[in-house]
Image (cartoon, rainbow, N blue to C red; front, side, top):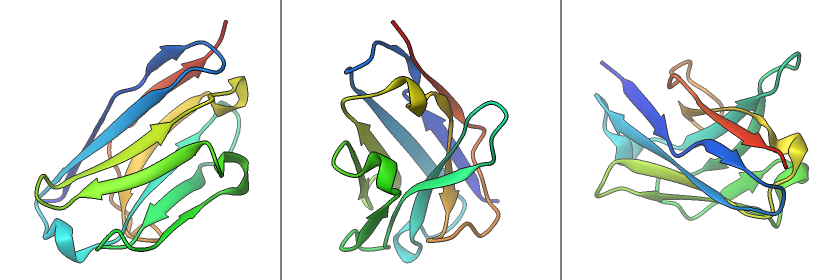
Length: 116
């Protein structure tokens, strides 16, 4: 079965950096686009970034452009989200998902808290 496991979240000060990882199994990772979503308290889950199956094309929500970078390693069945210059408004649970737009498979999420 499809399994997605996020890691790398934590508490960081404003301006700091984190790198999230999403380890995938149970499906042919190389054949799927993948995406990162986040959900802040009291808000709807939003798409943060997505990447095509070959990594050639990416997209980002405007609020993270220039600060976040999505990437993937198809040999390791792993997707990443490098987050730099973090802001308090980036505080959320971050989820990885199968698909350019989610196919409905989610990981359990990893908490990112940006606070001084």
